[in-house]
Image (cartoon, rainbow, N blue to C red; front, side, top):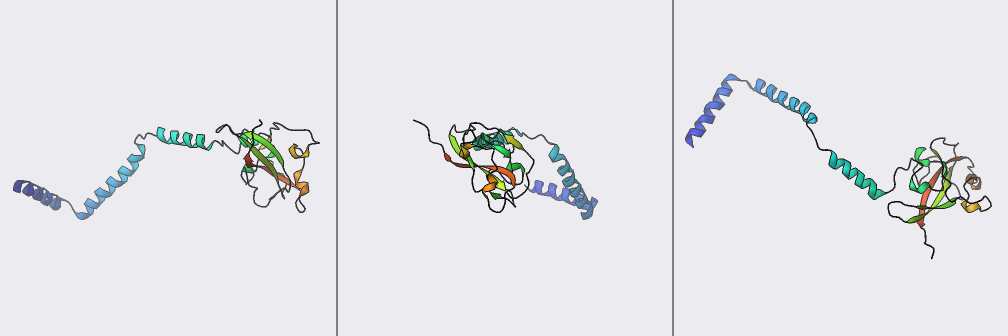
Amino acid sequence: MNWLDKLFERSARRVAQRTSRRSALIRIGKLLVGSALVLPVLPIDRVAKFAEAADAKAKAGDGDPTQCDYWRYCAFDGYLCSCCGGSAHTCPPGTEPSAVAWIGTCRNPTDGKSYLISYNDCCGKTACGRCLCNTNEGERPAYRMGVHNDINWCMANANSTMFHCTTAVVVGIAEERK
């Protein structure tokens, strides 16, 4: 082992005689910067990430709440609050939910269950004007007020009668008829 120690000692002394600390630091810095530029170019298998994202979306089952084909919007009529600063189930800031609402029963394609959905208008600002949806699945005539969606439900509010957008709140699981 003595010969190995002498070999490394001679090599280290030769390097020390021919280079300075500053040049060694410069070379190490260039190596680090160069490797940082090259590493992002290396091929990376991103298939696993895409598969995880697809699995997560399938498990969530909700789809995109900014699109009219979102499963909760089967009896929807109005502007989507998810496009107007709120979400599928909350009103945007500066608005308040209407005191009364209409209802619908929508089937979630992921779990196959039907859910009771309360459609609440958000009141207090002028109409949002974005993402208008009018699906009307299972709409009833106007004389059945609780299931009709062409009414300004904000009229029931004392302070804010202006319609802004509509939410779709899941109230519960619909019972199956026997």
